[in-house]
Image 1: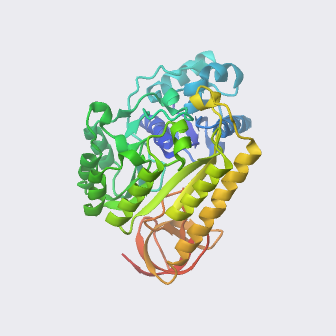
Image 2: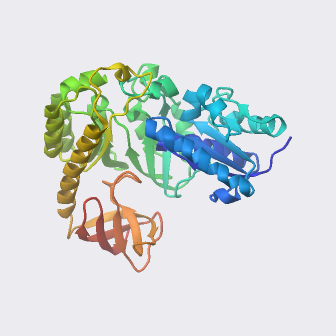
Image 3: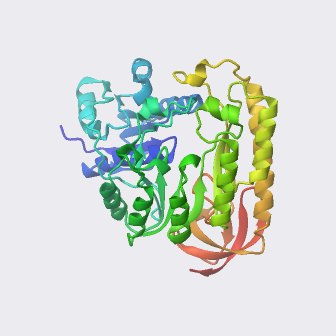
Length: 439
């Protein structure tokens, strides 16, 4: 049976999950079907789920339940895919009856066969039946910004994390395939490299190949700038730092998830870095690349974390003065070693500690951004903010959707173009200004 339907997608979770969703959309387009951004117009609606934390699982299930209301219109089938169905299919399939087809994270090739069976037979569990192939993507981001997922899985084995149980061990994608994929993305102002750990690219084959990959990607004429996310601290090598110094296409920005600063907690987390090593790395990065922007994430309320250790992390945060930070309350995840640890922290204490970290970082960010008032920054335009009535974009120290923005007035501006913006004022995380000229 041939399916010529209109598809929509609701994609949750991280940008790595977004890329997987784009491969499903690519399969849809390859089959000659239509894709819509309006769920009310979709005959088949795909919910691309996340399972990283309990709150993400709740959000994913709520998204499926919400999608079900579109059945009063043209909606015929709901496809549940992504990490939630990959990891929890045994519980999910019998209970989440709103879903018609269930796929795992590597089952794009099974989308249409499973849908055809669903139209004939009813609900279908096709998790794990795909061939794992990575077909062409239908890019869902703005034309000037695209993600390139360079590996899947993880072998860091942090004690709080479910990812290895969902995605398996670390697997680097072949360099020649990544180069073809990047070249096929067309003119791209910013290519964002993502993986569970981008810095370990190639190590599953016996040799770290991140720097050679960066050089090869930089040789592509359609790629103007490259940003690195998810760089584990112990693998930020001297070779990578040197490449960032010399390669003009590499944005001087590193996202380095630290998760904690205190050695006892880092050991319990299964993290390999220690406080003094982290401090030395930050000093080296700023010494070698003075303009570098550094982002990180921290977990508050890990089992047995004391008030003194929380205070020490706050002190380190104020010392390190990161440009951007994300903070999470520890989430007790079944099937992880930390789940069984004694000394679990009460939810209200975790919330208090997270809030304290956010307050400290807001003050740091406000001070750092205030220093930029009166300066002129190169800003890429991401579009229009209709509520504010101005254009919105980002400077090099701001990653898309996870950091702050630059809001600017201009007679005109085009998405994807770069402008010189004079900064007039600053808030906690955002800057405001007006254009001086196009670049």
